[in-house]
Length: 582
Ligand SMILES: Cc1cc2nc3c(=O)[nH]c(=O)nc-3n(C[C@H](O)[C@H](O)[C@H](O)COP(=O)(O)OP(=O)(O)OC[C@H]3O[C@@H](n4cnc5c(N)ncnc54)[C@H](O)[C@@H]3O)c2cc1C
Image 1 (spheres, rainbow, N blue to C red):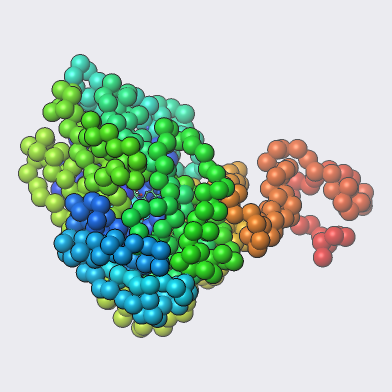
Image 2 (cartoon, rainbow, N blue to C red; image 1 turned 90 degrees about the vertical axis):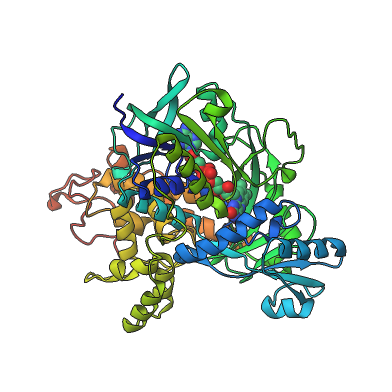
């Protein structure tokens, strides 16, 4: 049989993108399908911690060892996605001493560099820690940008010949007896270049081998072929603060409990989290008490959080898995390790494997192991190169440092661009066009926005995850329309308007749980700007109805040649100065 592609990867999270890159680099023809944007699932809804392994050093040492190994590799191959903040496991007076000791020995057993600090020494590193902190263990935790990481993997996969198809939902598996040979996808509608096929159409994509990397949704894909993939999705809340109240990852050093970590991330700090099993990864309650608990409990470690400004909250669902029959009751006790389910060996169904569990920190290792498995199935001889080959943007950060100096690019804006673009900075920022800052909160310039539009078309949420534009303090209040405006050269007005709406809606979603204090004022200001001033709620240009200008300014006089009370058909350009224009 002639297949459309050799390997079909389902899911565009860190695991799927990592697999696509790994296989493509080994010379295998790959297609990846993702129902939303890249990072649409859990990868776009996590903490951003590059684990040192310290969190699992007592409870799950296999995972802890994998984490420290991958932590070292990712610093090397994905330097522009990682910020080595360092991490502290902090003990409060009421936290048990014996656990502190177990954590320390666990780190040593797993080869995680660990050093004990007194309360005073810990506060020298993090001055806002509570005064009664007893002591801390310092470990090499870091912050990682999941969006940049995922996109860099996808770009590199494409460079090696892969087809990456977003907004393409798998709605069925193609199965012939005991063999799976592809999927049916439904292409979604949406603004611009983001769809490769006609929206609303379906397409059968056949493949020699299918890899199910749909994370918390892997069970749903299994159901399509009557295969049981018993993922146990577990939700966790995360709350984003307006600034970095801490510069180091702060973990609470106690056996287990909710609200025990703060991760400094770009311009913000992310508080988390909870661990509660849910039956449907697309439908679970998002409750205000969960957000309140983050702030109340983590204020015990960093008291200023109590009065700080929250900009949004979001929930993610862990793709936890444990082998059948394990029966762990509490989701916090389920292993964070990953599993490769070979359906031929397990269920007698050939042509497909699922990869479940794991963490973002171990995505590359997961990809390596499944790519080894796939190559063995295909009889393809090629070894993994992803532990050594830097991702696009991380090729040569030292040369970049020198170039930034040569260009005099040491302003805060240039520094932030450099952090995001890595070794691509020069290529993107070297422009003859004016390059104003479009997103002030995150210091994103027009050149960066245009580069992202070139990559991802008019899908502004795809632009957002590439640049962080609209992800700062104002949550898009002051820049959404400016970002949409950058589409004007290439796209028609309805496309730009639809893209603007989509981005606004996405930004609003997470703010609903942060509407108090200063953030409430910010949200009201955004509302006033977009709904009232820009008339985003009832824009006549979109509805096709005409506007009664007379209701505002008395209308045009007959001598102007216009009809009073009717909208002019000048394409929106001003024709003169009348009352109200000042
Ligand atoms: C609250 C929380 C905090 C976390 N914090 C951290 C952390 O700090 N550090 C860390 O290392 N890990 C962390 N994790 C774990 C980590 O985020 C996940 O393990 C990882 O992102 C999973 O990636 P994935 O690619 O396997 O799954 P996903 O990112 O969920 O990707 C699966 C993709 O499949 C797509 N899909 C689903 N159904 C279909 C379909 N029918 N057709 C096409 N596509 C489909 C989804 O849209 C999704 O994009 C956290 C998880 C949670 C929930």
